[in-house]
Image (cartoon, rainbow, N blue to C red; front, side):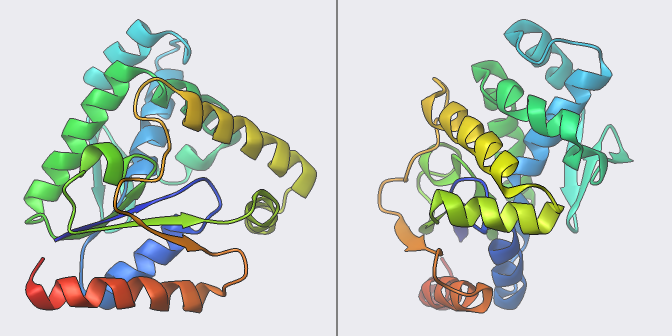
Length: 216
């Protein structure tokens, strides 16, 4: 029973999917952390994030794993470093390369296989590309202003700067040739703009429960 949770930056995917997975007794996979680790690998290698061949070569030569919410790059815990500003600036470029995405999809599907294909998986192309046959697809959304406000609150940043960077990432994610951000076919869309965190979690759990009882 794979549950996919897609949506743009700041819609609440990570926090909601983590808690919903824990309450439902399912493993959780944050695929965005894999792309951040890929961007970090590219930067560490001194490669150009915008060069598809260079980025794909670095990613192919690197090892990625996620366990208990910790992201590993070549066996090293990089959970903190992947949230740095340089990685944030580079991740959209690196993740736009088709070759990089193909490698990441293979890694993410292998992770799900190791967990018995029972997990809550979040990202930007999970229900549309990685697991198009998922038992349940959810798309979390929110207004651009609300998403920027949440990000600024979490990071202690200027909301206007966050909004501008968010608009850039939304544009890149939605227009890239490989696996663009989109609402997956058959997904349940939840607008979180005016909902509390607990209300969104409750809605997601209510969607998961019927599938859980049927065993996916």
